Image 1 (cartoon, helix red, strand yellow):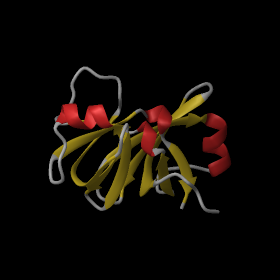
Image 2 (cartoon, one colour):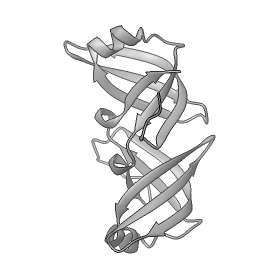
Image 3 (cartoon, one colour):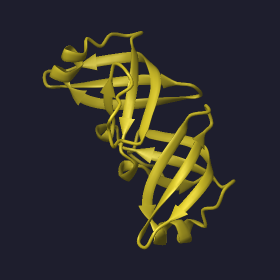
Image 4 (spheres, helix red, strand yellow):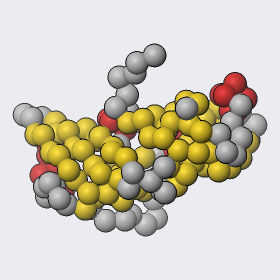
Length: 139
């Protein structure tokens, strides 16, 4: 199956914390960063997710926000540091490629946001991803 989701980050499940309906799944990405996904308990069971399971974390590029430094006091669980490797700016939107340790992440943000952040190729950024915006697939 081919997917239009640009961000398909390989990793390994390190923990599963089930709730009544949802579960949080902790993943160690191949580059060493930790990522949290909040998915349905039914999905955890269907995918048979347990510590040690190889997965791909899937994140739409429109669900990746950017900051120029780590953000405190924020409910977003996933803050991944990286360096900007590509910036393509259109009339309204900008596509940004971020090099993470061991992988690459794409974010699509407004042109205005890219300008306000002063983004340029080589700048350090923090990719912000809500746990509820991370889907999982078995590798």
